[in-house]
Image (cartoon, rainbow, N blue to C red; front, side):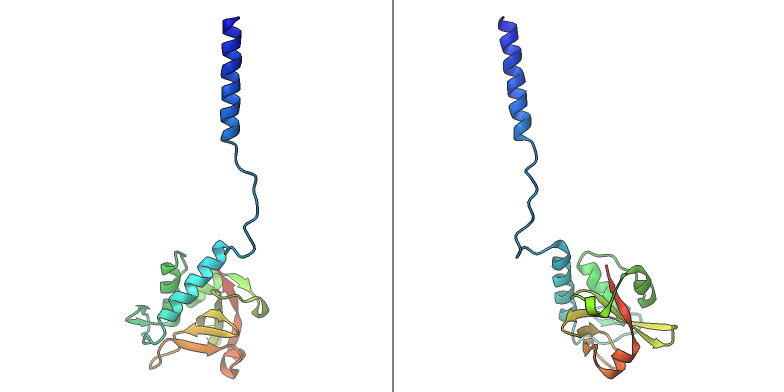
Length: 159
């Protein structure tokens, strides 16, 4: 009889121990709790804005100088996201996003010389993006509704 009650006691302890280790029921985060995607987007925009004024350097991907895709490459790596190095490769690796669905941290792509050369920037919101424009110009803001950029817009991309 003593063996039966100690076996029952042990079974009860095991059951209560297992119940204590059961996972909590899943609950959605509070409405104002940022998602991982929004945290990455915030980091991307913040990191890109720190590079405003950096000089354009063809092939550059450091704060000493950036080309357009080098700026994206540098910023995304600092935010913990891997992206290809060139604008063309970034375009083809990103998940397509339409103009109306752009969110901060998305990439915006432009066709500069036919389909030979792509240009890329980082969307910050409200129709504005940050990019490394060209030789002689620094990393700066530009507007998607500017006639030049609007006529060359290819699409958006998200990583």
